[in-house]
Amino acid sequence: MKGLAMTGGILGILISLTAQLFAVIDDSYTFGNIGFLGIICGIIGVIGAFQIGKNKTLATTLLVVSSFVGFYAIAAFYIIPAILMLIPALLIQKRV
Image 1 (cartoon, rainbow, N blue to C red):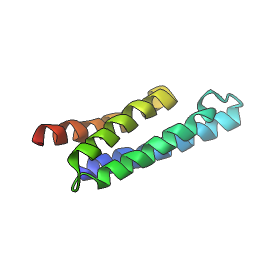
Image 2 (cartoon, one colour):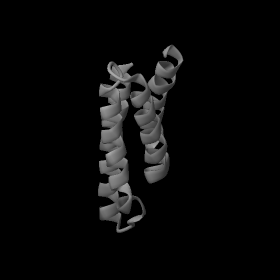
Image 3 (cartoon, rainbow, N blue to C red):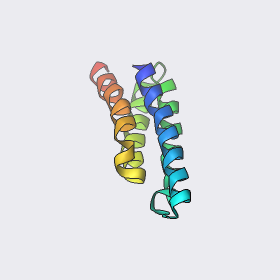
Image 4 (cartoon, rainbow, N blue to C red):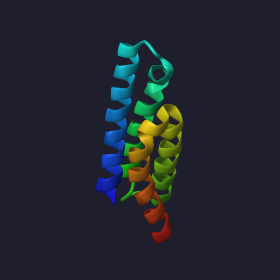
């Protein structure tokens, strides 16, 4: 589960960077302005993945928050990372 959450966080960072790059090239700053929020959410997701073994409630909170805020930040581009972070968050919470 840690690997799945880590993959979601790293993929979130990469997708946010890519959306930001295309926003700069296309001169439409709708995704570029809040693309940094997607990057921050990807970093929070990676931190949440590291917390899975230590503090399960903190890990669940970080993964869920980063999924929803990242989806808010760059919309449809963040669906796959959000799903990859929500699955471990839900499974961890059921084991507690």
